[in-house]
Image 1 (cartoon, rainbow, N blue to C red):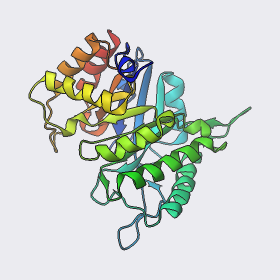
Image 2: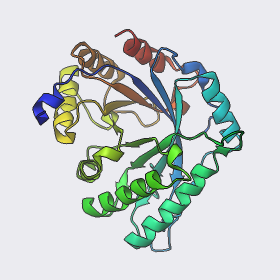
Image 3: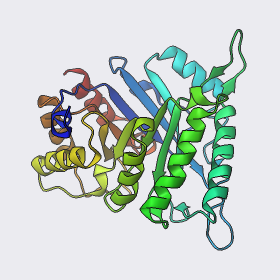
Length: 293
């Protein structure tokens, strides 16, 4: 099948994803629409540890409160809501959260080991088999100092090694990347070199400005061509009013409606649960839109 015919494939909405980054002390289970095939909570962030010169070591530590989002709480959530998966986001959004390895091979070794430890922390001892409560990882850097080839090499290696590790392979069933407009060369190179190991592309539409929903749809179609996939691209919207998005939620909803009518949209994601609380009105509206198709 040709690339152009692939991109024109019929795509049904199956997934809704919500980031959780800070402040919340529990999963906002009230926003889960049971009619969604897949609902993902993405816990952020696991962040790198840096040397004095600002280069990263690859030793990742979690920034969320493990008591609030414990392995048992993740397990209970997933048992109560069978469509839910939980993913750990790697990277960060702060100016200090930079992808800038001090040594590529050492960074890869340390990153694989430290992320593996984070995943194993979420293993629940059970009989007859242990339960792995984390379902995957999300690659989410907004500042990258390395070139695109080094970024793709390092991250690609870590993903591949984790997926091949028998101790955690059940915790890396879902892998996503989170591109921005400025970092397109990095994330696109990473994706095209690791297509079989990357399941979702969380593209941050909320970092860009659109005069109309038609411009939104045009960008979506351009991205489909650039990433050469009809069914992995998820547009994102932000509810953060303290750092307002140049894209309005109205344009986002109207753009998604057009894409749904042309059977082109597999789902969406929202940044993030903390700034949506307590109403979560946009989350409800978007899931209603997706599940009525």
